Length: 429
Image (cartoon, rainbow, N blue to C red):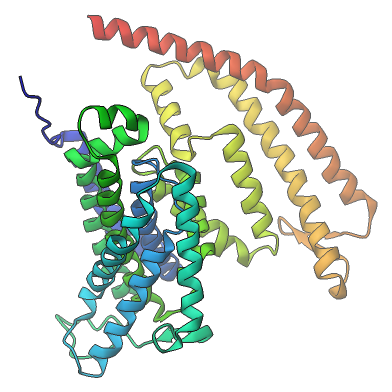
């Protein structure tokens, strides 16, 4: 008997999720319409595509890449050159199709570099990708004719005749272009998870030896997945070129690769939608938070450490576990310890923020005086009282947090054991 693998069909709940996703994309600029909201939303949309493409490697294939920015960055460079050629009248290429140029470029370099990198797996694959990104970054400074040197390549996205009244000059039009490609790309990457290749790459991630035993070439599975991932990363790069109208060497750097790894892990690499959540949090921590504090990089690092220690599955895994407890009506059993845990954690976090803000002010901005605003309240960092208050909050909140955590973990473990038993009874019935 021959086993066949049929693609899964969407059920009612999934259709509802996709409809809600489309509605959010359409309505988001109507809700967030103040200041630089459109630019931030555009950046989130671009990062979502980039993160989802990276998760095809990390979450679905178990391939830890340190060089994924190569495909999005090179896609961005080809896209911006295509825009300049179209603006000069040398080629015909509407702005709405520029992301496709980036995608094809990303796929080409996925074919080129992927054949080498996917011959190995594990830590060797990671080190090769790190070498590739450093190589490309060095080339970006060695060949200024294509990469533009340190200044990069700039363009003007408004060229040619407008189509249906769309010139893509206003940011709102750029946002909806990004939203369109985000929706199409998300559907495409989700469809990939339902294909035989998508299922095989999951098996390669979990047990490559068994996959080889049943007759599949694990290297080709990794290679084809990387090529498709490079295509979607290139689309993200093309959209970035349209949105920012400039591409620099930073787009192909290890820093950009590390950032998308960080955001994907924070959101939850084990879930398809994890990079979407991670992109939102990542933009908040790197773009919005930097407007309020100079210590935003420290907060990003602390947040990442907290995720690794207490939620290694990412933010979405925590949300899914909570929804599971709610679905089985067990939340009341963990509500008390969870509430104490959250309140004590917030108390300790408040003290940490007070201390960090005063320390940063005295270190980097002491020439402007010793008064610093923390949570909108003016505080004199030269006095002992605010330091004692911050320290007391850390000790009080942290002490309760550490004391309550074992109680919470016992309750949490017992609840999930009950859920497993109930799920088994339902399956047998």
